[in-house]
Image (cartoon, rainbow, N blue to C red; front, side):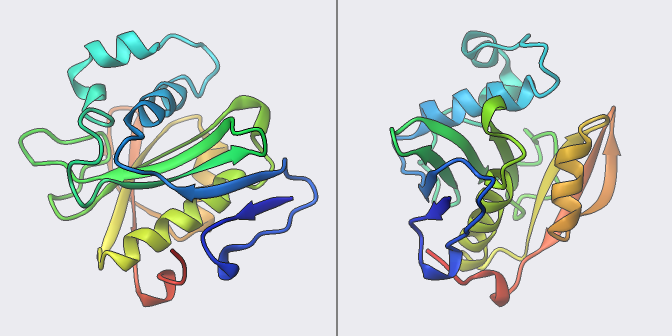
Length: 188
């Protein structure tokens, strides 16, 4: 069973899911974000990125560097009953002079999501995404963006099922956006 600690509205029961709890990320969780940035970059299974290579890459380290300093650094983490992080969904704002891969504008948080390989296809990614969209709606964000690479069809299907639409293209990735409203702000 997947169980959210956020509120009774977010409780998800899915018998095919690994047992886990979802909770908000804190300002001290930058290392968790860094680990999941690596995982999101290695989604193809090639394992080319490491914590060290992400930290050395100016474009990638900004996703986790100095996490928690901005009030818009938000996210959620799914943990097994043993405390192992199974997945995370997070976002932060970027400046036009230093945009992220899914940058739209300086008022639109850019979202990242990753689930460890052994916990995929069990509903954890969708639960994390729903919980994080609720966080962002409570911040009164009008919309959220992300970038999804060509070939990552399971992620693309999840995002599309949650109302994300393609608004642009950069290299081999689509930028997707989803509007947020009061109906999204039910938890946390």
